[in-house]
Length: 253
Image (cartoon, one colour):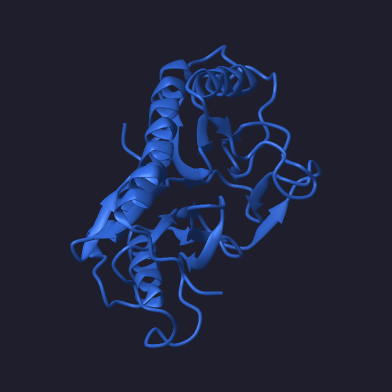
């Protein structure tokens, strides 16, 4: 399948959906504290989207249908955590991954946040995901291959002392929540092969960070993804487009 090249009007429509995602994440971040449940956070974000004419794009997606608007991933759950009614506690970390559909266009972004005071190890874990994301965005330019971008992501993660989650990746976005291309956080095959980044492309970059092992396991809820090492993980994501030969972040409030 070809990777879509978007015109200015289409990019602005995707930007509008992503702005709502970013505003939703700001709202949710303000709620992250001990005693609050991830279900409460998810419900509030969904109400906010609906009040702004959008809908949570993850809800009901795929098989089994995802049961909530928010992927809320606590501690060892790296991605796709299901919101629940267990209160957050001091020292937890929680990943908030949120998508929106507005007028047929999609947005997607994620952050991992501390609940109160957390360990230095978890601070470094979160910083790895965030710093890797921005390092990769800064490296993007027209003409580089997506596999070269994967190499940038992998190097940024490994040099910080962590390892990328295997089996999951960033992705294109636009008329669907997940489109071509798939953007791994690690390199498979030769970096001088595969599609190149072009003006007008729109895609999500999302480093997913493990501590020792990048091999994943899926929990009994059939959604929550953890590392086989059972240790905490982290996740950050932005939707970007290519304008003027370089990446511009769309998922900003």
